[in-house]
Image (tube, rainbow, N blue to C red; front, side, top):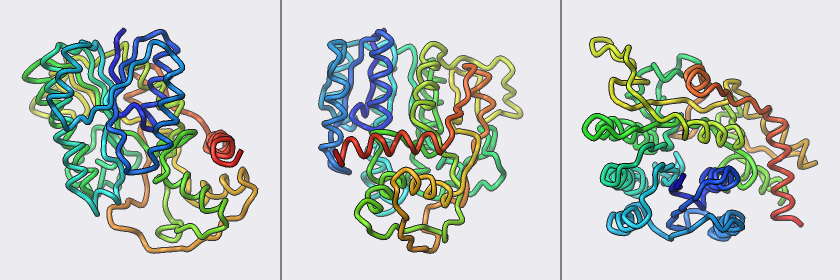
Length: 335
């Protein structure tokens, strides 16, 4: 197939593109290459993808509709995997406009182009952040998600609603993926594992929020990619059992679906740091702090719907995933 991956120089985008190329697909990649974090890392990811002659890259910002429209009109992708977004819960609190521009206006442009050019399957990144004030564990796609704690979480909830409108009006198959704390090689420098490793390597103090009393459903990147790849061959479809008098928030009588993508086994933040200490061969200097605005105490994914839909459930143990991350980190930055 001809597949368009947005945010292709990003963490998940790069891994998706490499897997698709290995499976024989033609991949078009776009990214605006902004400086939210190290552009050099993004360029290195692109070089990693560009080893294949079936890959084409275009520097395009999804917020620029005319540029995006021209690309669609020239290429006519069959599948679109939208990983482009302004990431970061805390960043969205400091800079909400950047989050809204990329995550809502940019996503609207993606939807419009998919509709206009007859895309057969749109898969897009949502987030576990949509669960917000929910405290019932594990988080299920059938739960209400009307109480986000950050602009980032609100923007991802908005994506799901916008996608449903397009699925309804234009019969566009859309699948939203609520990712749970994705980590692994080539990860983002603003994420906890990367920041901790960098500070530990320098012998500097790491900030541990809520005094370490936090749990996260850490999901290894290879598990995330396998989930996405399986969804390519199974687009969203109408739920024939959908009850409009008692609607299921995860499905619809339109071609629209929502899935959690998590490990289904939450771990303590302190255990995560301990695994990193083992692999780095260093003891972290910890600065215990209060809970930050927008943060949640715990995330825990119910993966039943994804497993039923594509017969797959992420399962990589944190210890194994951290080991692979540290091996990449040392090879990329320290060798």
